[in-house]
Length: 279
Ligand SMILES: Nc1ncnc2c1ncn2[C@@H]1O[C@H](COP(=O)(O)OP(=O)(O)O)[C@@H](O)[C@H]1O
Ligand SMILES: [Mg+2]
Picture (spheres, rainbow, N blue to C red):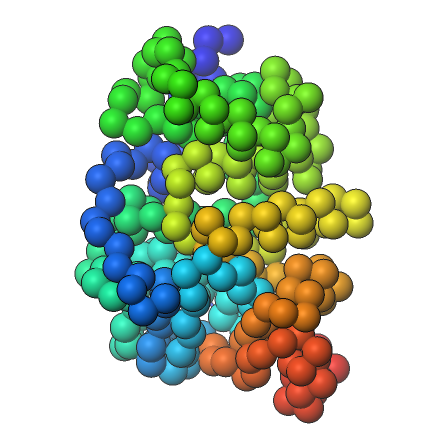
């Protein structure tokens, strides 16, 4: 099957593929060290408040874990940041100057916010290398990227990324033959090819083996600094591993922040204990 036929099979027109969006990012101002501001955000679905006066601040380069029981509003929060859902009230700023609520999904992706969904969306028929190449398509026509030669900056970025996600041995393998965990890493790699400033990752370790979970924690930790990373996760052991004792963990409950701080502190917060025991 040709690459183009393969792509036509898998491209879902409802889905916003950030790498299909032309790059021309507005200027990001993080002079106050804060990359993302969510303030007073609420959203209701049929009268039910999924997000309720939410305030959240993510620093530039930070790795933040967000935990909370099912239905806490974690995915809805990501939907708001990426423009998929419009809040009823509140504000959402990317740095000092970029008003996310005034932008649509492609513009937000273009501004430097990448999102990893729960289910991997790699191109199964294409090789690992081709998936990464495709993810790099910028102003060039996606269909012609495979015919164009990569410049040296692009090839070194691709090599660096494939090593970072630990798939250099699998470069030529069709993505469809990767394990579930490897597909998740490939998709993270694909997001990285767009050099996002903020990466949103929703429940990355669901369905992974323990070994894959440890490797995923290492990978996400290695991204912090160069990128800001917000990881939503349900699995407490994974979050403990990821947050260590020097990162901030936010507990979401009924659409607002229930507790926030170091993992050791948050875990002992009676409000958090109650919510998790009551599950
Ligand atoms: N599009 C929607 N329409 C109606 N209800 C929704 C919609 N999206 C989310 N909800 C509801 O909002 C609440 C929060 O959901 P969600 O953000 O998916 O929680 P989490 O990701 O923390 O498990 C849930 O009660 C869910 O049923
Ligand atoms: Mg969710």
